[in-house]
Every structure is written in C-alpha cells, then in structure tokens.
Image 1 (cartoon, rainbow, N blue to C red):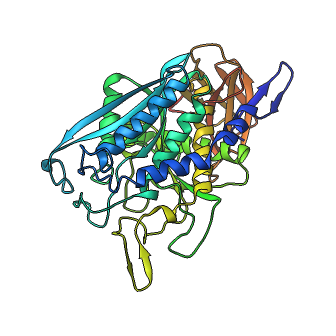
Image 2 (cartoon, rainbow, N blue to C red):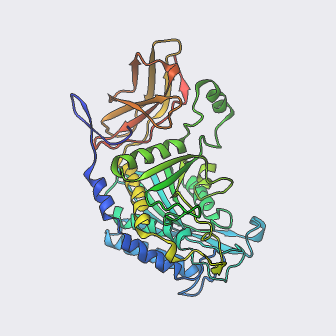
Length: 440
C-alpha cells in the first residue's frame, strides 16, 4: 500500500503521521460555508462581469479572495507570497469571449524550506456562469460551480499555512474556466516560463453537491479524474509502451493513485473513485492546460452531479428548481473533499523528490531488476512497488534502503508492472515513478 512508512535498521513498519489526522480535524465546514456564501453573494462572477464594483462581479470577487489570502499570510508571519497573475483575451481567442478582458488568477505561494522550486498546486475556479456563458450581467451565483472549489482552496491555505513543508504549495483561484480554461492555460504557461518543477495540480471543480440528478444522495464518494499518459510523450515513448506496457501509468495516473491510497489510509470512511479519463465525457477542467504542457494533474470532484444546478438560470419550471444556489451545497461534504486535498498537499510537500531515470531489466530471467538516479538531499531510501498488470492500484511493495538499484528475486518481469518511490526520513513518500527505460 502506498503511504507513509517508518524505517528502522531492522524492519519496515507501516505507520501513519499524526499531523495528517490533525490537518483533517482542522478543516472547518463553517469557514467553508462562510466563503461559499460570500462568493455566491457577488451575484455573478462571470469572467466578463463588473470589475469596478466592490459588491458585485468578478472584480470584487477576486479582490476579496486576494484579501483573504493576505490575511492568511499575515497570520503566518507573511508565509504566503500573494499576487495576481493575468493574461489578456479578445473575441479572437474563442467563441465564448464576448469582449476584451483581463483573465486574472489569484495566486498564493507557501515556499518550501528544502525544495522551494518544487510545487504542488491546489486550484479552484473564481468564475461562474448561467445558462448563457456570453451573458455576463444576469445572476450566476455559482455556489457549487465553483465557489465550493475556491472556498476549499482558501480553507486548505488557512490550515496548511500553520505547518512548514520541504516543498512549496500553491493555492490558486483560476479565472476564465467557463470561457475555455484560459486561467489554467495562463498559469501553466507562466509556470513553464518560470521553470517551476511541478509535482502536480489538484484541480477542484464542484466539491459540494451530494444529491445527483439521478436521485442518488452520497456524501462519501468522490471522483479523481486522470489521463493515462501525457499528451507530450514522444513517438519513442509510445513505441516503448507497445512492448513494455504502461498504458495507464503516466504521471497524472500516478498522482491519482497516490491520492486514492492516501485517502484510504487516513480517511477510510471516504470512497475515492479513480476515473480512467481526463475529465467527464467530452468535457474539460482546469487541470487540462497543465496536462497539455506535460505536468501531472487531476480533477477532484463530487461523484453525482446535478445538472439542474449547473450552468442554469435561476428559475422554477414544472415544479423543478434550477440554478446553482447556496441551498444546493452540502458544507460538510465540501469539508471532507477539502481535507482530501489538504492531506495530499501536505504528504507530497513533506516528501522528497521522486527518483529520476528509473530503468528496468530482467528479460528472460527469473527476477526483475530496477535502477534509478539518487534524489537530492538526505532520505531514508527507496521503495519498489509492483502490481498485477490488470490491477488499478499498487498491490505489493518492498523498502530496499538507500540504494540506486535492486533485484527482486523470483519476481518475473512479464507478470507485473513496477515503479519506484523515494522515502523521506520523516516517512513520507514521493509519487511512484514508472520505468522509462530498460537495461540488461
């Protein structure tokens, strides 16, 4: 099982970190509710809505979000670097852009002490829409889509800013999602330009609804969407997959497995569902622009959507209430999914970097050999994972110490898939890395 382990000189013992349970306890449903009500109270947060008013529109919303991040930073001795990141869009950029405007993201960075240029990101969307995405004046409170994800991101910042981490954490409100993922595209390109080493992005889009349009009420299940392999893979990498496997072992899928396993360890009451797809059928979210540039990223969201509340004008027809209003949000559920994010941000930010250049050997041999490059800094060692070729999760593991190669005697390479993770002295593990090459 992927998770935290305690290493001794004589044995390996699976263990848990009490700080992770503390983080879960510290997430507040009341604070999340207050933030959702505040965001919905701006009337509309359409990307092209009012930017001057202090009480209505996208401008008021993003200024309030920045002020909240500033308050969080003040409470942790200026531990957050808070700023606007923006890009300009025109109608020539897409069919859902009614006029020229700035797409403005609100970014808060909590710098890591050991690996400051390594970032794990949690995002929510600032903007909202009603039935017509080009209508930027009619009310569109967007309580669940996506004040819930934005409120969760802010709450994660409040909780995690009380801790010190080895890697950096970014909390961000992205704009322009409903018009074509422009905010995510802008930040992903900014990250590429700045040379950020991104561990992964946890995109939260609708984390507050428990009553599906299918009639199912479920306050425990949630979905983790992830693509199988990066779209940036080379032709040689595609050719290697044909012969060596790895069709479902890309970096985003490893991030999804990490989240799934961590939740099963620390929040066993929850039911994480790994969905083998980039996003919902034919639809998109703000992790995709990061995936497009080769970064790991997943979407975390509710399991049962209610389409009567998504992208709808507020109205009642034939006894059915439409519209994304606050009454459709379950704040305790939003708290749970916020905690899901917070514990994974913390685990990844406390973990060492993942090993690089993992290679595998053992063709026509009764054993499997693995080797990798050592990571920077002092660590406890490395852990080899393997699983049946049809299993969605890593099933078996072995801590092998602080070495850069190891042979699994009696484990035939043809029958399993393999990966390697780095383990910190604090017990926290990196993402598992699937082999990218072979050797004899």
